[in-house]
Length: 353
Image 1 (cartoon, rainbow, N blue to C red):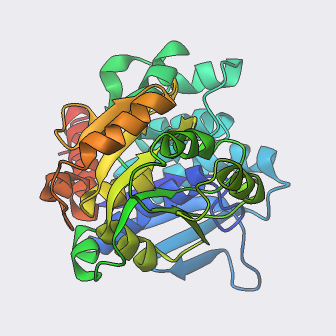
Image 2 (cartoon, one colour):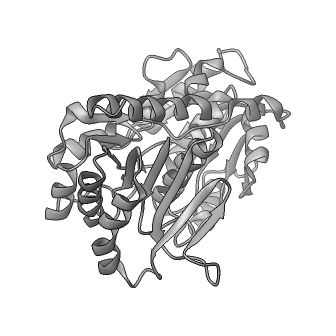
């Protein structure tokens, strides 16, 4: 299929979760041999109006991020001329969804809206208009799907698709050091690592070791808290690790704890539980992490430090694993199939197949 993706800003402009997710989708479909085109603002120089990179053709609709208005004006005509089978747009900025809708009408092709929501979905006139334009909306979780419906999106056109992982890569990495509990996230104001540290402090009379993966502005505060709680000799802060190093750590660990207050999709937790970890989630209203462990016999949902400590103890009765094939549906190939199935369904609905 010839696929037209629209995002004024790319991960080359700003390395946000939304932009990373959008790029991942294009990469998945390009690797499957589809003709993938990204219409965006220019982020390269002296290479013409297009750039070929990793199977993706980038099209500079405008030069740089200062030309947003020109991007919106030009986009419908650029898309119509491209004659794609499907147009797939990011939700940021929401005004581009309206421009992409016009382009889809001119091209007589369906429009898919990717709403990742890592900054939430503010209830504004533009987001409400954007919610009413696509033929299909894709979100990473039921949490974001609910946010979209709250601003007026039709729940009947919303599908969820997770951030993918590479199951073969998980199996290929050798397990790392044995550890009882592992946590991984950027250590910023939303990390909420104190919940885990307080829960572990409740178990200071037990024999355990914990690892914290990640760095950030709050790391020193968390290290001080571990010292104040007299568990710093059993909590190792290892800083940022490359993906294969993290996978090795997860395959060696027994429990992965997810306590962050805001999370539209718990990607690191997914890598960890696919690598065999028992999953323990502290529930928060703005986190979808609990969705991964609902109905799973190796997952626990907690609401307090005491419950978290009890869950860690209960997890000790479960066998240690280094891979869990339950999460094969989250593999890159499976997620690519999910998108392609949506595209084909929309084409059939529009009489294009």
